[in-house]
Length: 80
Image: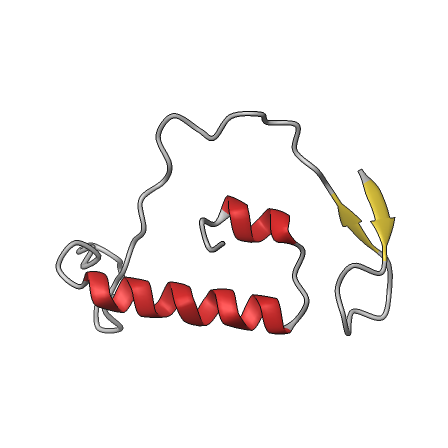
């Protein structure tokens, strides 16, 4: 664990924690997608709308790269 200026615009040091995991988890967490009208998050629509899940993942990855995010969180979120 180290601290430094890893987050552009933060204006202060932040902690970077590097996980020592050598293998990916056996069961990655599934992507979830909920409609705005489903505030209680009772109906996951990810399987029904994979194109929306893919588009949102792409937008998140592009934004993270634009901000200079390190590769570790992108890999952890399967956005590489």
